[in-house]
Image (cartoon, rainbow, N blue to C red; front, top):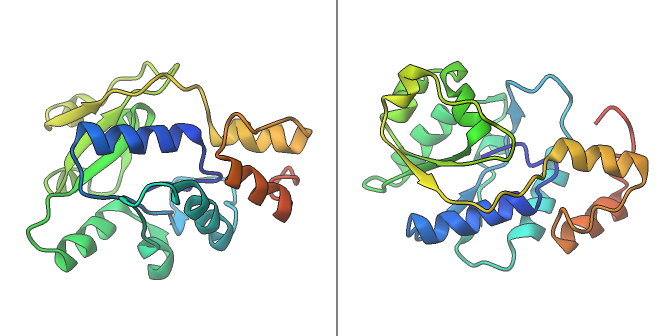
Length: 189
């Protein structure tokens, strides 16, 4: 899950690494409906969904799941996991997060309950040296080795606003989508 505003090459690399490292049958991409911790306005959901679809089309084990967008309201991971677990009893669920989110997981709504329902899988993120909160660290987790790709959606949005090239930061189909739809040209997104 994530805002994927926009989805970029590091997201795709992490997902591919998780498929291999965790031996997953599928990996669900879940664009957030209304990310409750975001202070900025996010790009409308149909654009973020279309960009994710374009980015994952090459891998049949990648599945786009609009569950949070369809549910409406603030997007809480615990609600999503509960819904998925109820719909697919007996399935082992992994929650794949970056090192940055691992460091702030203790701020998530009912994070202890969430970590009782999933296997936490954490990928490193360049420049983020924050460790997890000591209470979070007590929960078991798996590390997903990831090449250090220093890419962020914030930087991509800034580059588009400035007219800079993003072709090395996002999948080609995502770059075309951003250009075709004029996304991120306004300083408000």
